[in-house]
Length: 322
Image (cartoon, rainbow, N blue to C red; front, side):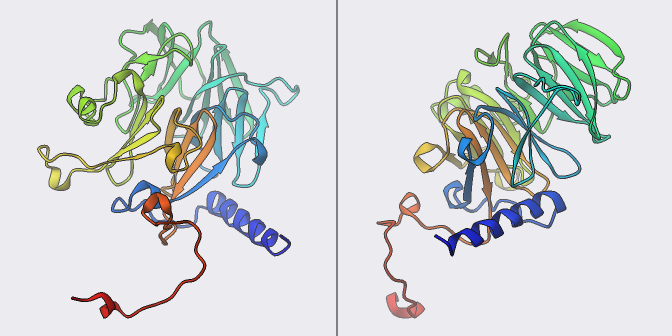
């Protein structure tokens, strides 16, 4: 046990440096099965204040930010810190359902109670809305669009001045790379609204092919390599491999990760790819990270007969030749 502790400290330090310093990392190799990536998890025992995580974002300084059922949480790779709504009080954000880092590096935070917060370098500006905030997006004209349960509201990027307020028809427009597929009066009873599903290849025909109901989809996003990742309510996450040569006729290759393969929960709220191409999966029961660590992990879930290995031996390549 004594020998293991320094290694754990070293591993945590490496993780922190990788997040904060932004050292080079390889994108997830799409040729590997999801189960072959290294999977790390964090929960209550690791200091996470709430294991129900709705949304993940990353600011330019490298910190990860988690919107949880118990407020806003900052993660530096080592520690989880619950951030108060005001520096002068211990008041917490409450349930945080939406996060967005804009082009200036400021982060916008939306809560179920209707608080819209713009945070930049530790300072906060707050606007109180009367409706739960579901999603926050940055538009091409540099305005910030806030989707509530009943309206689409636009604010000035810098001053937070209200620019417009319109009825929320059809869930609004969604990010081309990332599509929030759900809307509704509370985070717990959202229904499918997916303007970008078709552009991501998530059509009714595709859903029938994978035996997934539309109401099961919570979020979808396209990663740096062009693969589409889908977060579901009860079926973990799915990766739809990028079609080769832009073919639309080939049957897409689909891979799934669930609790059977080590995911902390099959109820997934968000999927986020950080600037180092690690994939973060926010679930009902903690935070998960998928990373390609340049070595393959072989276990029973990848085909090994047993996880109990007593010895390893190297043999010539032609030993099993015909």
